[in-house]
Length: 312
Image (cartoon, rainbow, N blue to C red; front, side, top):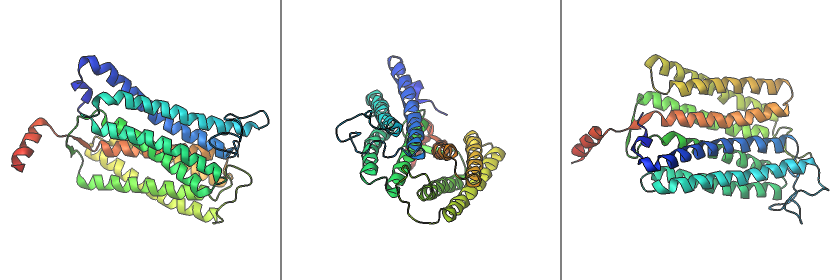
């Protein structure tokens, strides 16, 4: 794999290293806020701060009259500020390479723009009394931000320019199927949670759809995902494809996800297990992005010249 850092001027390598650290921090922080958001919902603290953007009508922070639910909800709001600071640092650090690495610059803008939009969506969830649809959109958007932040990290080592596949076309199609199943499983999981007992507040009404039926609909694509990911892993191992390490991680996470899902179903949806399930879904999306991007590598100078001659 070509390492773009090898082309960075010596005086700029420290900034490039800092950019890499900031990019990882951004991805991790966007995953952590899913955990803190899950804690808000699973502890019934969704309306701990009953207004937005203030916590109460007269105070930005929780007051002594409010309960511990307010501290949990306000803590999650503070995480948005942390995400903005980290995403802002990524923008500042990547600015020097905004023309050479337009791909990184665009991804950085998407992340910080998504975080700001998520803050507004979080406010809308409060204004609408934790509407399950808005809460679901909030979670899906957070997972997408984790995927985008992961893409930033995955493409950093590659120099700009065209890339070519390092896996068979049929294998790449299988990975695209895996990624589609990841998305379908997550979306149905959000719909299932929207009709479960963890609404974020005891007084929030659910959609009224049979949660057990939705749980079965959620499990089916999950099992299909496990089967397709396992086939992809065996294929990669047999053919010695470069992405096999990512597929090992993906299969292991999916197996854990299935185990957690079965545990939830049999033991009445314990809040901690639900929270783990939420975070691992984002981790699954992240690993899938890494695997897809690693299926291509930069075109060599010689190959670029051949392409130019062919175009002429």
